[in-house]
Amino acid sequence: MATHILILGGGAAGILSALKLSTIKSRYDLEVTLVDPKSYFEYTPGIISVLGTRLDELEKRFEAITQAYETLLPSWGIKFVQGEVEEVNDSEVILTSQTHLAYTYLIVATGSSYPFPFKPTTTQLTYAERLEALRADRASLEAAERVLCVGLGPVGVEMVGELVGTKQLTVVHGGTEVLPRLGGEKFGNKVLSVLKKNHAHVILGEKAEEQPSADGQSTRAFVTDKTHQRLEAEKVYISNGLLPNTRCLVRNYAASLNRGFVRVNEYFQIPGHEKIFCIGDIIDIDEEKLYFTAHMQAVHLFKNLSAILAARSAGQEPTLAPYPGVRLAVVLSIGPSRGITYIDPLVSMVGFGRGSLLAGVMKWCIEKITMEPSIKMWINEGLYFVQKHRTLKAKLD
Ligand SMILES: Cc1cc2nc3c(=O)[nH]c(=O)nc-3n(C[C@H](O)[C@H](O)[C@H](O)COP(=O)(O)OP(=O)(O)OC[C@H]3O[C@@H](n4cnc5c(N)ncnc54)[C@H](O)[C@@H]3O)c2cc1C
Image (tube, rainbow, N blue to C red; front, side):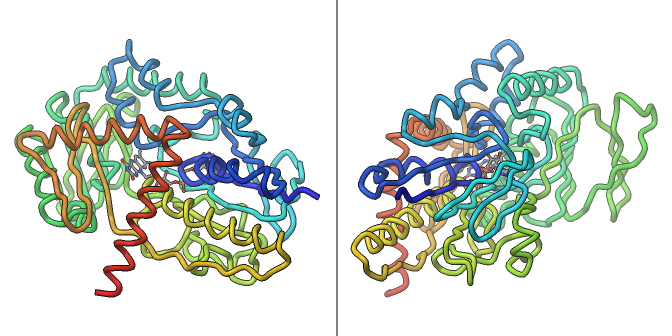
């Protein structure tokens, strides 16, 4: 009888898991199914460049970072079900359509929500709907004179990178430092110097709260909480944190949730529910929520699942490896051709002027690799190998 592996979520972690499992499908008689409410894969780190692209080139740019699941997955022997998971229990998941899907092993990779336009809303489940919404968003940016960005985390930094020098820009950030956990002072200072050189108004260490605006329509107004500055803009981007998509776990696994994030053991299992694995943005571990970490977790989980399947077919107990964690590697864009890169602990590229050209090229290469399934699989396997040995070595030193 076939073993059913069900994957919830077709983002970074879910897609890589599906692709990796497709390589051992026939060896262990697997049926692999991926569920997602959308009909298309969207490469999230590429979306900010879509937002910054001219209207007449937007569709081409958006097309480059998306793939229809129905085209991508069946060609790897993976079944796709479009739907939103409402509830998970120890043997099946239930979609909002009331469809029940049974599983032998479950991978929950439902990621996180971010305000529009950074992630699709529930009314942008098809490629056409999302494209139309992005076009409208871009048109409203083009019409705006003043732009307000709330939040200077990695997403906010990439967004202001697209905007500096083109608009009257105000940035409010709750922290007193920028990107303190990614690349240290050098990274944050670089971002601030780019903003300063381009005459952006930057407010650090304050929160901005929305107020009724004067004209009620074309502008939005915010007031900061300490110096009470009133900020008005025709266009506002909010990127002040993510919300884990774990509503489907609330009914049966509430005790395993911490502020919405899932507590997992070192094998990514929900303790006491060993057939359910959770990876990516939804998990409560001390690791940055990044595409790179989601990919590394997916490769690690694949290795443990392979061990489980091999042991099962030999009638033995599996030996699982604990997740070693990875050292930080992050590339952020600052506009269309430049960026900043930090690869812990050796490489830090911030460049001159608006950032490093080399980091911009790296960002472009990562996108190309991610959009090409077979290359993505092998590159991530290689990165995992390097990370595993670096992490083990660091622990031994
Ligand atoms: C704008 C932006 C830019 C970013 N840039 C970078 C970057 O440059 N570098 C970097 O390393 N990281 C970046 N990140 C972070 C990175 O995108 C995430 O950490 C990563 O995508 C997490 O992967 P994931 O698989 O956990 O979740 P996601 O990639 O978010 O995928 C989750 C999937 O689950 C689906 N889903 C949601 N709810 C359900 C449900 N109930 N049932 C079924 N499916 C569901 C969603 O539709 C989605 O397809 C960025 C994030 C944002 C928002």
